[in-house]
Length: 385
Image (cartoon, rainbow, N blue to C red; front, side, top):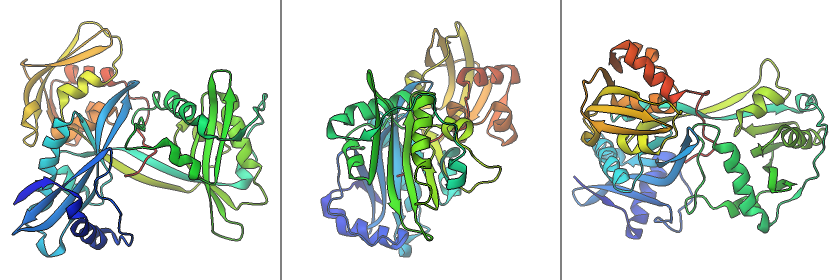
């Protein structure tokens, strides 16, 4: 089996595989795009499988950690069972490490395949359905902030507004170019901004969707930096009463739904779970934000046959908000590859990892690992790939 980066010459072969796997009907005009790359596996001189890698970064502890987003993994139906997908995943780990992507995320339809190579369920992407009568229950803001349609000159401030919130929500992507083009939001049906003294206090992006008697509004981002801006944007959605049946809201800031919206006891949620893998533990540790704990160290034994560059005894040292991973130590806490992602993101504590058979060793040292990541809720993404 030969694995290589794909080129434009592979467009027809890749489209054929993805059409079969995902029922894709639209042939892309371009295969190789800025901010992304991909791999193909060849068997007997023909393309047998494909895997795409997007350039992203996720916030953890307030710092953006470079991440490779895996998507579009497909194998020829006639050539399955020959290890094509596993070979592509193994090769992707080396490629992502070479390009400085210390983490990797994917949305898995077959979790067991990816668990076998070290990915594990870690966070969510959520949409919720808010009936209009519940939106009407939103408290009125004491200060109604004037809104206006977004202009091209707002794009930089719009991204900065998003980043101000995203830095505080573990897992959110930093939407870096060229993989994400912020100008594409101007193509949406509704892009409303709330100007402030130093940029934007908030913004909302949405598309009008058919459905039912009156249709729906699909809100992709409702982002605001303070409570009055949040309430102003929620009130703007409530103003659609009589025109809409419901609003579908993608959760970017969990405070919007959990602390401010008039959410009923029962409501409809569409959830996509994503899996995280630590590709390069020393690089991931160095890039993440950490609490300002002085003189804290934990001796690890990392079990990861598919990423040998960080396997074996390692000492995690955290000092004054910075951390490093050094080879050596006693290996007091054994972490398997699948444990690294959920621990790093604060999605699972060491007790859960132990019960799942992904952690062994001294519990006192393991407890320090929980203190270090300081999980602040379920990690989440607001982007699908």
